[in-house]
Amino acid sequence: MHMTYTAAVAGATGYAGGELLRLLLGHPDFQIGALTAGTSAGTRLGEHQPHLAPLADRVVADTTPETLAGHDVVFLALPHGQSAAIAEALGPDTLIVDCGADYRLADAGVWEKFYGSPHAGTWPYGLPELPGARAALTGAKRVAVPGCFPTVSTLALAPAVGAGLVEPDVVVVAATGTSGAGKSLKPNLLGSEIMGNVAAYNIGGVHRHSPEIAQNLGAVAGQAVTVSFTPLLVPMPRGILATCTAKVKPGVGEEQLRDAYLKAYGDEPFVTVLPQGQLPTTAAVLGANTVQIQVAFDEAAGRAVVVGAIDNLTKGTAGGALQCANLALGLPEPAGLSTVGIAP
Ligand SMILES: NC(=O)C1=CN([C@@H]2O[C@H](COP(=O)(O)OP(=O)(O)OC[C@H]3O[C@@H](n4cnc5c(N)ncnc54)[C@H](OP(=O)(O)O)[C@@H]3O)[C@@H](O)[C@H]2O)C=CC1
Ligand SMILES: CC(=O)N[C@@H](CCC(=O)OP(=O)(O)O)C(=O)O
Image (tube, rainbow, N blue to C red):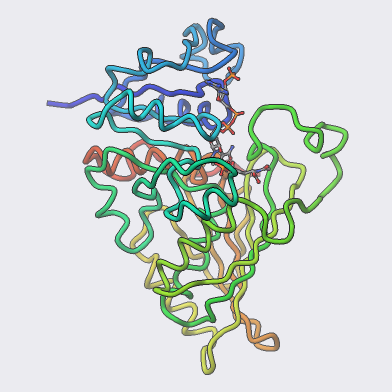
């Protein structure tokens, strides 16, 4: 008999919630239950997510344990800091997949330094492509979905770092579309500020995703990895293009690097190491749960150069969340997830 799971989405009016719902509408094993938000409660979802026609007339509820109770899966797409109270109230038997940051970091001191609030705890980290992650996610009842920059940066660097081909000291410069910042209006995201402009932000190692990337790569390397991360804001709604580099160890060249990537990702449904000469683009992964990767060796600089592209809302948030929910529930990992982008 075909089993259908009920899924609630908290933060249904936001960007991450909207992408979750788009994907859930195409998933064969989920029925969409409660849709909740904050100040939008009481309004129709169609006012906030005009692209989700089948749900247009659904009324958004308040985000409370009562409205979220009784579902098999609760996806949280809320601002940071709200997950703990909900998780406690829902109890241990509900699968909770948190798109926010609350449970991503293992080190409470690092959390407090970067987020300025008490550490809620640590849940299984939702990046199935990392060594050992699938086992931890299979049957899990709690999942911390990675940040969007950490998803692409970690996957771009993990094979080189994990195989010990590069020094444990990496540089990531990543351009992101504006939807990464969420729907709320911010001065640097006003149309006239963002159009026709590219700007760096959070420079100097202060971005909250720096320690998350370092945590992931440190686990892969089995030693501390230093990460210098600089984000750039570019005038497009979605997508991240990350350029990641690290000095190679003596004797390492293009062939070894490429082999490590093909070995790590050859069987991965959602990570594509592109043929030589082809470069990742954000357009090619738009709406897809795909990470595109290209790796090269800069001989003069002695550095591995890895370029990765994702859609921040798909593999970078909602697609990654659904991939983990599939694993947690014992469904086929790729169910409801596409590798087909939208181009041009
Ligand atoms: N955008 C991205 O690329 C990524 C986002 N994430 C994470 O996903 C989460 C959601 O982000 P995003 O969708 O971008 O944010 P948005 O600002 O677009 O949406 C936030 C959602 O949360 C709701 N909300 C806000 N405050 C409250 C509250 N006090 N109580 C209940 N609901 C509330 C909003 O409802 P209302 O309409 O009522 O305001 C809205 O539905 C964040 O934790 C973010 O860090 C993770 C990775 C990438
Ligand atoms: C453009 C933009 O502002 N992007 C966000 C991406 C963060 C994100 O969405 O991830 P979290 O879940 O960790 O908040 C930023 O740089 O903070």
